[in-house]
Length: 181
Image (cartoon, rainbow, N blue to C red):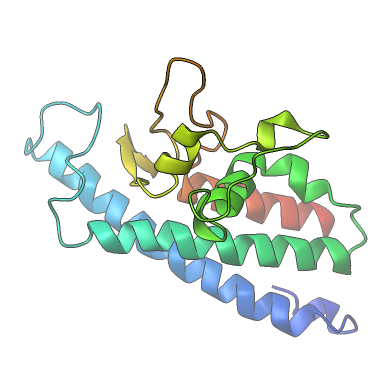
């Protein structure tokens, strides 16, 4: 994807990272197609949620989200640096980046943010800390999402703004990259 930008020293590593993101996207897309085929075959009657945890591939799908979020954050930061985009990726992918920061890279239960004068939305309530290790994908009509499970307590609740879909986010990242190439 970046061969036409070989004059940039980051081009080779961007290609390596993109290759990995594509692999994870294809794997999850294949799992989504399998889930849709099961639904079409009448094996499931309700499409409100998945019976996650009952299939051998469930742990793999969860890890695909973990790996994708971490690799995508690295890719986007390097792409942003390489093309002088002034951090525009942060506004374009806030849910995935927050999930990466609170779950896949720095689980909130292990590294909670308790005070933030600049951004109170970064504070990790006890509920957010608990949910950070209870993440599992959910099925939504035709794709998996993660980060939608919430705990609501009497005075606080878990983060509500970190739900995202790997396959949809991948297509959005691809469009973001093409727009700036």
